[in-house]
Image 1 (cartoon, rainbow, N blue to C red):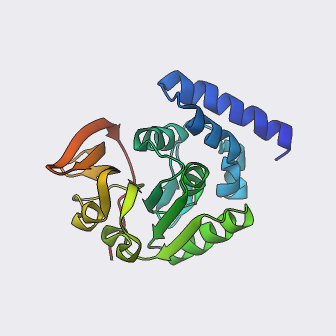
Image 2 (cartoon, one colour):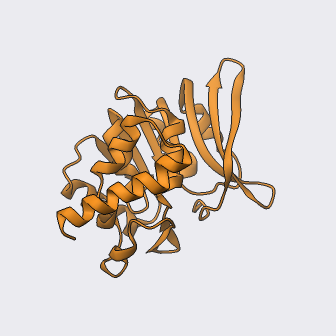
Length: 211
């Protein structure tokens, strides 16, 4: 895509899909403007890359709707000193957004083909603050814990205890849970008394793959 077209598509996406729905943090909006979403989908879908819906990336997975990524990231309240764990690298699009905001991003993807593609794409874009793991997201990344923020980009059947354990005090875990026959996107904050829960919205994510 030509640079001017991409800039217009980004401006429209941010104005009509994000800002109108309450995404208002300047650092979050700035991160979305820096990341070319079409880079993370196949060529046959690039003309739809900035539309208001998820897109297929193969292997039963999707790149999430821009607004849902923005809602997740804004509520994670990521600081430039944060160490962030992402569960479900997928296309790598959300990973790039996180890398624009955080000091370090550790991302876990269970599907080998998506792991390799996302890693190559993100390296090609020049990100140097991302580390990659091909593994089961339910277990997190224990060796690199604790994390200030944890972001899960697929619906879990239950709240993974390993992720809670790997979350630092006053850290935030953003996770879609599918436990009652429907999905809810939750923001969980860890404190000495347990987890404070806030529901962000009803949602529809692909299942978190478990092997």
